[in-house]
Length: 283
Image 1 (cartoon, rainbow, N blue to C red):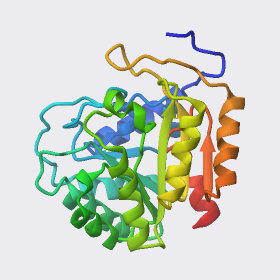
Image 2: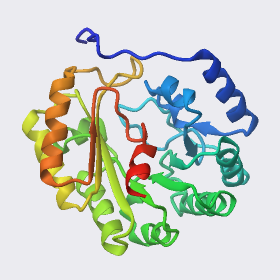
Image 3: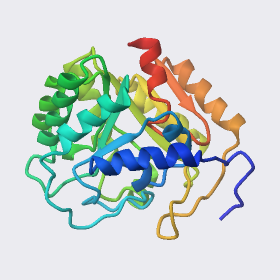
């Protein structure tokens, strides 16, 4: 792997880290910050924010970039939706991000747990903005319609990488299907903000990144995040290139010129990082 450049650095406030860990464990919940080895965990925990991971901590897919464990998942926790809502209220979050592992083993792909979680949050802390970061639900429109009916303010579905690399990076996913998920949500409810994100540094070209942004715009995506891929462990794909902050700014400007409502591109950007900044400006 190429040597990590100086701009790939992060710090952790141990006091804030331990405080939030204790709270999360007390509610018997998972956060993607741990499971996916997010580099921003220190910054987010310092602000008492986290991205909640529902449907357990084990994914039925095995994407080659992801640090979340995969295999046979356990049964759903019926108390999870209520616990998430209670913790959101305790932390006084004005913007909450709910994501999940992919559960291809469940007949409903886990949408019922998403629905219960959204409803619990809206009933417990009605002024909190709800952003959901969803799997593709196998592209099943009847499942997406159920989600749309709950009216989360933001629906995020990450394309993750350029189409050429899908067989290597996301062998169980489909690029066109992911774009269709975003387009379908916006088509059915234009008031919902649609969002997507992807990583760079796995072997894509600059032209492929630009083409991906054009595809997202055509799919009526409102918000885009672009971050540097960092290998979570030796079991995932290696980094092919570290992009400079200047290159990220060039991609960000290209996206803005395409007309996206909001583009956030930087080495340590992740799809949920500083998500509240968007709601402060637009919601």
